[in-house]
Image (tube, rainbow, N blue to C red; front, side):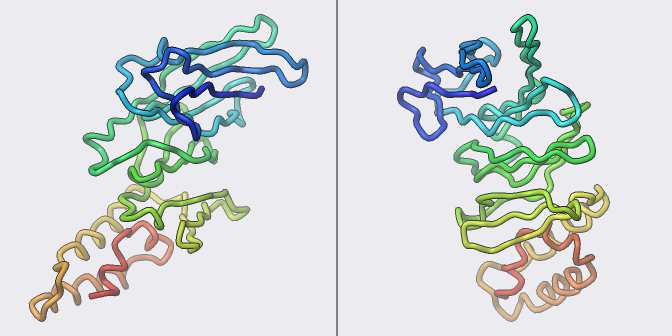
Length: 238
């Protein structure tokens, strides 16, 4: 299947929700014919008055003819019956960026990665990587959050042969995430991040104890879980 977007005033993979001509087209590449024209506004209620971003669509590796994609803040799935040419859409999860991610400006996603029954994807300028249970999408956790500037946002990411996720950022740095991290380990990383956040933005001698405490917390954290601390540079600078 090939998917195309009609974005009369959006561009760059964006759809202007105010334009009634904004559609998604589904093509059968093998038989060179169009199968369906989709108006997702029929499937998603309360679309905001802003550009909507269509993420890379991904085929489910475990279920034949099932596909996943993120349309703005909404995770959707659909199945396709080739015999009847029927599509069945389902809204799986709607992210609320106003309460879950402060300061978000856009909602654009990159590729969807699958591993052991979970999906992983990254929100640009929103909150980092998200881990979603395919069987129960509302069961999800935020793995890495709050990129401070555009250079920290992952440009591309891939699943390595070792099962870890490798991502390259806009400042050409390569990072690795352990996808087998537990909620307890994430909590430990969050505690280190909280300790670093206690350091003043303008460092003085009064921050000495906070710096020492944050350094000890960082050193005690397992190296595999250190990438989940997103303000480490603040400790280095201090």
